[in-house]
Length: 359
Image (cartoon, rainbow, N blue to C red; front, side, top):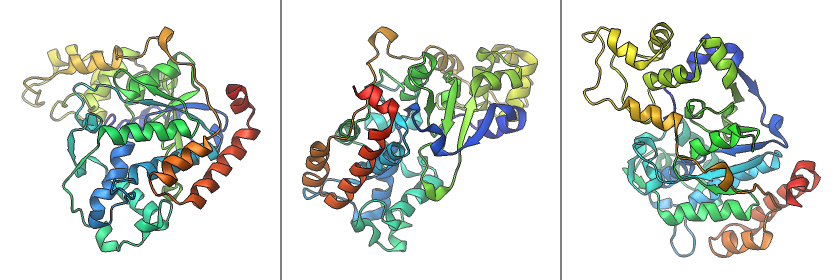
């Protein structure tokens, strides 16, 4: 979900805090990336595909593996050094219930994401099997819910590891772990589809980093210190504003949108003072509104203590391991996989920073 309307709000009231960049800008940069929704997003295509699901010889769905492989490969070929914190136990977060194996409505994934994934499949970015499906089949949702299994999540972790990407286990929210890695300087920036990362205190936040080229979206880079300066807010006030705008952890006050949220925080300074002063007949405050819990999640998230954080190490792709896992066990095209691996190895062999971390 992210913070409702935050990008538009910052573009209007804090324009110096964000800028557009190309993917190539981040060559050689270490980026912590939240991919907690990605498995679900890839499986949505399978759900909408009905009888033409991407499967291996055992009938097991492989769409999530194909999507994750090509998404990660694009970053590696661009010279980006990804770090992937994987989701741990998530409390009070309905938008990421998929990571706990719960059943989730297809509508929870944006129409833009679905169209993007469908376009990739039809264009042949994944496997030829998918491209043979008709337009009518792709656009007709035949499965009302999607369920991500523990095995599918574990398979994605294995895939990323075989590609030479550091995979870390977050104790709770992957976004909070990304933010923590950036705050302590272990990575250069953190990336996600959701703007929650700013509320978690990420100094440098990247949006659209993992978008496909077909969407032609530039990477949007946000600098948190400039956000606070231009809005004239403290970090505590910014978190309260984000909660008022709308986040994953609690409802909003009826009648208050992003613009009003900013105005009220600038005027009163905190949610408590706003609640003491606003017209309760005009604005509908939820009867049981857990804004304190939401505030605690953003300000004091469960993260891996610095002394227990793993050393980040990148390596060349495990060619034999990828061949066994993707080609032998899951029916991927040998020629396509080897072509991608060759590109990744070529980039890594010429990147000084990769070589430094691969010693």
